[in-house]
Amino acid sequence: MSLFLEPQSLAFTDELTDAAVRLLATTGVPRLSLGLVAAGMGMSRQGLTQRLKTELEAARHESAPAAYLHEIVAGRFGTRFCAWSTDGLFDDGTGRPPRLAVPVTEEERTGTRIWHTLREIARADRADGETGPARALAMTNHGLRRETRTALERWSGRRLSLAEVCAILALVDGVHIAASAPIAPIAPIAPAIARKILDDAILALAARAAGDSAPAA
Image (cartoon, rainbow, N blue to C red; front, top):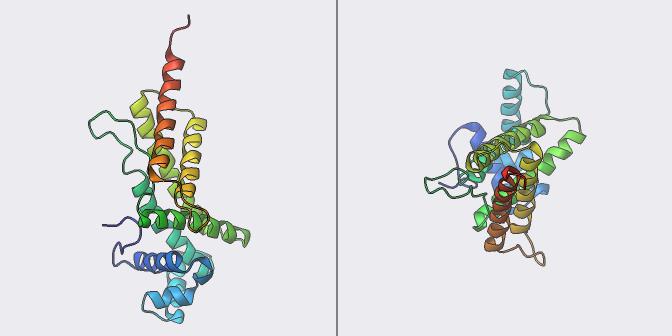
């Protein structure tokens, strides 16, 4: 099953996320409104707004309905993105280095763009005093950092510094943006080039580890 764009379940949060993702994938941020998300779910805008208000009251959560929509989508889509990003990290028994995710298919490129779009939406919400979407994305970032660090340390046999982990994840961010460039004339870099950039970074990390552990002459 698709990790990005196909329906995940019949739960309200997934239906909401799927409707928002379809809008982001096809029409972009300006069309991400309560009314259009509701239409994508087969609901009225009033019905969706009331459902969000009910959820907010039940959770004793103070937030505007639109920002709460963004928070739900950020959380659910973040879970999907984390699953895709970490799928190839751990050793499959061959002793191979961890493989950092590269968007290859159009669906993966679209999903990667949506992930970065949600981060910008969360930034705008924070400027309006709404911190829920940013907190939801922070949970995904924490999971990505934890899983990446665990896989790299298990493979390299040493503890990595926070700076090393952050450097790898920053490189992944840049490669993802370059590999999923949305419109001409900004052509995306080829998946093979993206893969080589990330694989070389992992091997360089191992080479530094070997150099650090070598006895002094």
